[in-house]
Amino acid sequence: MTVTLRRAAHWHRPLMVFVSAMAVLAVVSAVGVLADPRVLTGVPIWLKPLKFSVSFVLYGTTLAWMLSLLPGRSRIAEWAGTVIVAMSVVEMVIIVGQVLRGTTSHFNETTPFNAALWEAMGASIMVLFAAHFVIGIVVLRQPVPDRVAAGAVRLALGLSLLGMLVAVPMVLPGQNPGIEGIGGAHSVGVPDGGAGLPLVGWSTTGGDLRIGHFVGLHALQVLPVLAVLANRFLGGRLDERTRGRLLTVAGGAYGVLTMLFTWQALRGQPLLRPDALTLAAVAALLVATGIAAGAVLARRPGPDPALAA
Image (tube, rainbow, N blue to C red; front, side, top):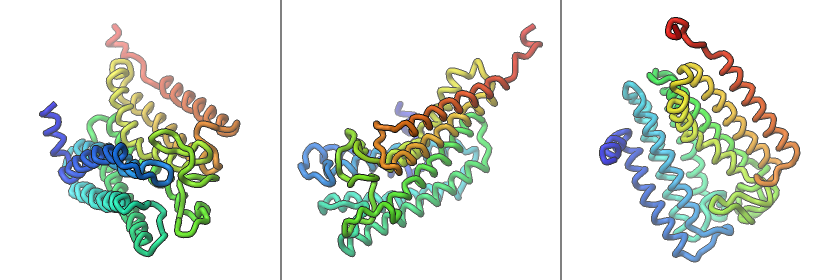
């Protein structure tokens, strides 16, 4: 365990230092949730720093691990990782700073100062997106020995970019709630801060754009885990190419699911109260995924006759 942690510390030093800081912040924020009685937009005021710090621990660790898989260290990717750290620090400083001031960070344009902080957050996310994209291009161009792992990493980086993009509707004019000083919203059809699911806070009375955003971003963890499971449990039964193709099918389905959640939210529909159209779309996705997986398995090479003899 100690050896593994020491190895991880050298994956990408700036990212791993940032991950360590976010782990500490997660503990502090968890204490704040329990000890600070203040409530903001219907939830404990320290809940947002807690969610963001945990998310950044996962994001930073996964990204550093992905960079460690490259056969040769890429200076461009290393610098892009450092840029991501810098932009993430800007994001978290503003979020925590606004909590200490007792106000919101996202969509807050109530004063010139709050509006400037919100604009700085938006700019930092755009730079982070560009740096993440650069890492994706580098990974796409460099060969990774394990074909299944390589496919998982490339799909995960691309789908997490999709996860960032589906958050854009939160700040479009159509999401302006008509409240002075508020420049966007997570919820669709209902005000932010209403009834929500435990911990995540996703609206249970209207659509919530955070769902597709969350699902897309965490492709960064889900797809590599699927690759590990495929290699572990299917490695002796399916060849590498077939496992890679199955992972591509899973990635495609995951991307469509991200879009489906966003589409459901844009229609003002709560996650747990889908209408017939949403259920039909989910059923179609399941059927299409099953057919695609079946087609991949049907094309897999048979056993070598020489070996069978």
